[in-house]
Amino acid sequence: MRNVAREKPSGQLHGRTALYRSTNLGAYGEGRTIAVFDPLLRDRARSLRAHGTSKRYEHDEVGFSYRMDGIQGAVPSAKLPYLDGRNEHRRLITAAYDGRLSGACRMPRRPAFGESVFRMDPFLVEDRRCAQDSFAAASVETSAHYPIPCHLQKAYVGLGYSGRSSPVSEMAAEQELSLPSRPEMPDDIVRYVAHQGISCPIGGLYSASFQSSRNSREPSDTRVRLVRGRANPPFARCRRPATTTA
Image 1 (cartoon, rainbow, N blue to C red):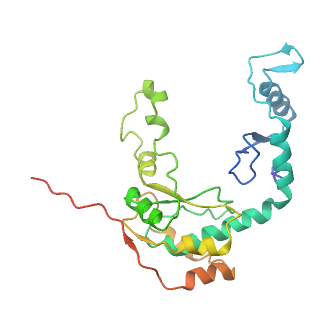
Image 2: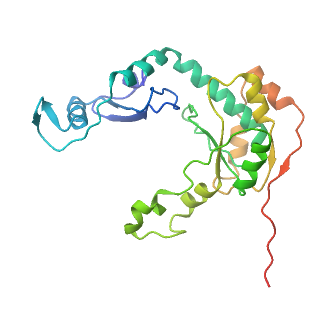
């Protein structure tokens, strides 16, 4: 967020960032920030977060109760000087995972125009349950983020969507699995997680050309090369059981 103001022209709304405690710049509990470059948008955002008030007890429009208490601002402010280093550590963790799992699972596409800060380390695998069990057997906790897509949530049943109405979202919801990714993770733990390999059908969301494009940007850090250079461990077989029809 510190670099945004120098790069974006005035009069544009850049976006928002979450301050949930497990995010890259987490608060003690919960919070949100937005970057605004238009004074009118800034003033309206400030009004909306406090019930649509421009002055105390004067409500110009119906707003919200989105005021963040002081402790939620103090914690990320204390973390901010360390953010760049912590983000770089997340990139190294992801590079280590990529080097071990890219042949067995489908990894996210990396954009050429910038660098990710890797809030999570997700990948796609056809048999998610088998992959979870494989990692769990090695005491590695995984998470399936958002296993029910928005359009299939009960809250939106009135919109009339059904299964396979949004096949890409539904496939990602069925196949996504995330590995541990915290900047506090020491190198030996990262190596251990990266070495718990799986062999399984690849999820079908990303293009086949992605592998060659990502390999052209090999990380230079020696810790990552050490992980890549070791012999493959025994792989757990994660394939769906064959089915027969009468």
